Picture 1 (tube, one colour):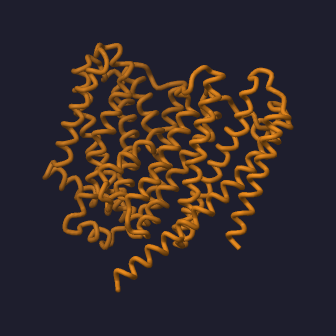
Picture 2: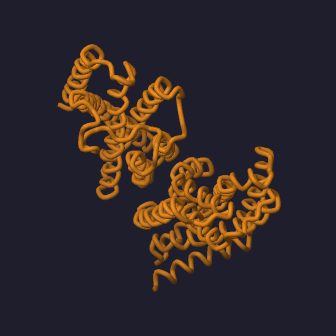
Picture 3: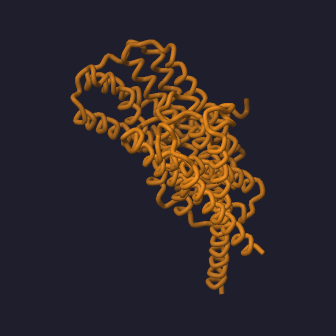
Length: 226
Length: 228
């Protein structure tokens, strides 16, 4: 109970500071729209091709735009030695990590919710036919992105090249989750149900979330405290 | 003593490799379907086994480092990763050569091949992270955490042929299939070549560890000189 309250406090603090300055979220949102625009030059953006490529396209947009938010997650705390103060506070490292991850998930979901209708309009795709399963896939995929991203953001926070290192480390690590999320999103946007072979991808995504959340929560104290 | 062990390992591995080469190239007959090119498998499969072994050693060393915090164990982890990366590259290149002859293409985006490439990229990321951190304790700690994360990609690469329907051939070795898919003599040669490469890899790791230790000594001397 106490742990949950600590996580909530950290998440609320992160969300408040982000929503007041809107530094990362504005940059990330405009970047997402720019990538969506750029993809329209890659192929002929008619309904059918767009539906076939939808999963890959959307998740690349989310992953690239998400890196901007994830990069800021810990580096925001460097000013005025806030990170040291957070580590010295009675909140355990795992609560700090889960709180930050939760805040990142909410920010990323916000961006995704804005991107989906934009994608629908730009590429003439009806994406709402399987709305709730699609939301489930978005939530699971975003959690995976946020867990790996927040953990590696903590790993790279003290580096000079952190903006460069984070995507270098996050994307290869994230491939199992991205692969399943892309596949499932394509299926759902094409209007087909999640059944048969597709459930294997859902299992892979859930398994990825559980394994890496457990691993990150177990190791984050070492990364933050030493 | 350690010097002698390195020489002994390298000599034993080297000689065994020469003997294996003689058997593989001159003694073993061509394979019925693949012809002469199948001989590259005696290097392809052992190089992957060596790289998996090296990454396992690196992962275990990283876990031990986080528990004990000895600089020597961190040196073992980085040395094992570097040797593992070299063997991953050998595995990818020999695989590509075999694929060019048998499939007619150098590369295909098959799950096993893709995961092998991801594995290489993840460990290259590990080496890059090490270069980016200046403080030795911080470097050892953070890269140990990354190394534990990275090992998941090794497990997926190893199991990819069981989890997905791949273009890459399925399991042939008898410890995975129960036997009958490969001639026992050829299989023995595969293991012999694996052990020969393993001895050489152990020598490489020990040489690399010595370099790490020397580097640490130089850094300590430099710090002392600055302090004076």
